[in-house]
Length: 244
Image (cartoon, rainbow, N blue to C red; front, side, top):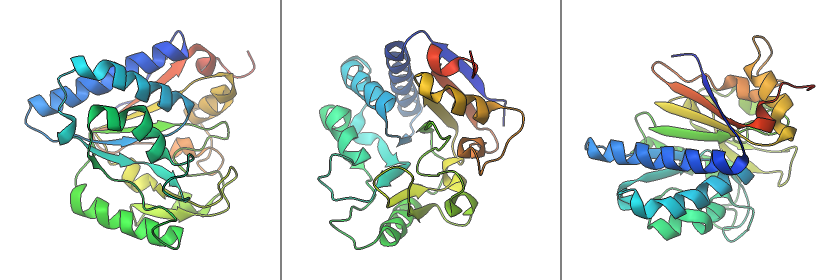
């Protein structure tokens, strides 16, 4: 695993546009080499802006979206039609527009009874079609340092024997969620962490510091595995040293 690389973009808009272009280039390259790309999406404001940019840039990319496999790093355990669903937001922003149909959503509360059942079914999906490494995992980071739905001091931080787990008592609503674990998120050729805005600067600094705990700042658990390329994509505000 190489040392993480950092790319600082002038504005949130520049971050979204550049990352979108990089996603499309990656997908095109994997397909040109005869592969079927598998990527993991994240939620959040900057991710939604990036998703809209993918939709805008996609027609010129040459990517065959019917041959791209889509996963989600985490999901709110709410009804399928809830506006809080990461999958619904991604579909509205770009997946439906580009014609992606190999989209694996985490089961919603309108189809299964518990977050545990949703996590178990997602583990089955992952075990069936995502037995290897992901080509790309994208993650946002919260002001508290969380990634996916891996929150500070929560027991899911220590789960290393399954690919997805239920989350309860989330510090931000809704309280019940499903998340990929570190073990699965780190099994990727590339991991891109996206952060925009001054509210993320402290968490980014803690995540990238030479010392600190995963329990306090879960983003520190994104270490990749052998051969993983990790890139932090930050705007100027998120990259500003804490306290400036």
